[in-house]
Length: 259
Image (cartoon, rainbow, N blue to C red; front, side, top):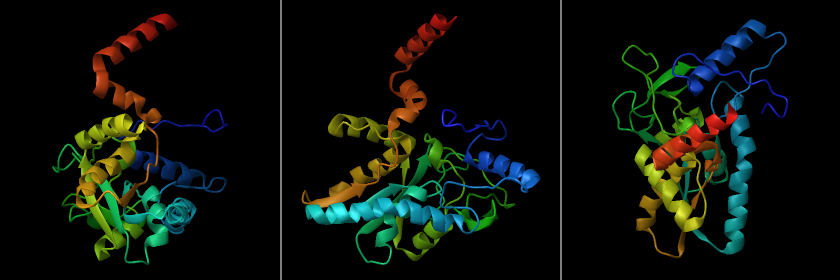
């Protein structure tokens, strides 16, 4: 981003996750709104941002429909990870008004379902609330305060979910499930060896769910996973989890070479 001329400001407050980045961005905008404009790149926030994200990302869903039709695929399910939900709502958008295929959103199961160990808002874990200027389901404590979250993937640890996804999950058009940190890591390793693709950790949650769902279908029935990012960006998370000793040795040698 800096190479393109952007000023990137790191967030050093709170848990230093997306929630805190939004907090800081809103504080900056509130003190300089006369000459700045606030934008968020997910399917959440006040209107019109959820609609904008859905519409812009829907090119993915439209391409899926066209390519599946051209290949004569019998698509049984579309599967996408869900943090705020921009990739999922765009992927699902062209199919929302139809009875099929199944639409499956995968949230971060993290280390377990104790408060602070996950970021799964659906399935009865989230509570209605208003945070960051919009109403949806959030991970809130008994006093209505936002709970801490956890996910191995930086894009899935947001405490809220886009309002349109929350509604579609509540009404049943979208099914929600979770994948744990370990399941996501296993999916990264599986798809790297079987498909030659290194999923981003966010997308790997969808890959993990696809591995489970695949047992329900035959070889001629298609499941489509939205690979919304590549694992290149996650090297500093993946490397110490997959090969810690060699990774530490590499960093030590590189650091000595820079002195």
